[in-house]
Length: 243
Image 1 (spheres, rainbow, N blue to C red):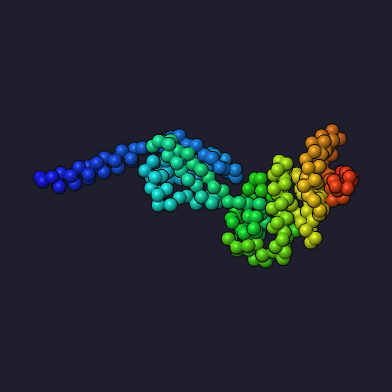
Image 2: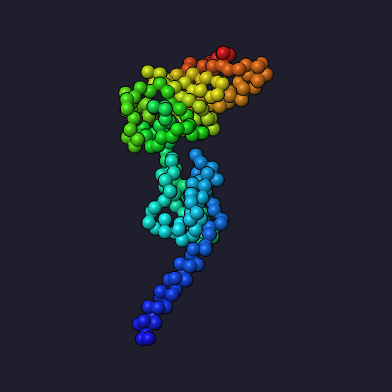
């Protein structure tokens, strides 16, 4: 056997050994970052428990190199970084979602520009339903066909302020004049128009007091009127009325 054949045989043998070893390498330690809409357990299940090969190191390496990744609703992309053959970090890049509307029995989620980025048959926790919008037929990955597209700026601004103050709401309703009303479980908050930052700041301060009063007096629900609140004018007037 000449030297060339020996080299070829050695390369083939080495390749087969690598493949054989790779078939038995299993990812055991998984760290997941960047996820908000899904828990780490849910992400792990969708990527690494999809089929019997999903935890194999070689399988995931090839999936990353060929960009043949698992499709996950509300996830734009993900990246797997190998710290060792058995230890990985998975970075999740989620889609930017500000709200959803109900359409033909489905929940249609849209981003800050009003683009419908995904749909689901159930609501995703932490994302408010947006009501009061008038729209035509909805097409996935197209802009929500509303009458006034400036409403998307209002929605983004309001949801960002709510996030800043750590307030989660179930629903935001808009009137024809683009005035907002929040629904926080058993509390309805009429915001109206104007500067919303001061109103949300006031809401953040008042919510614990209102909930304490409701619990103490056995109030099942009520409406907080902040539409007349004007921080700049020194008018701190607002009222809370029980249902």
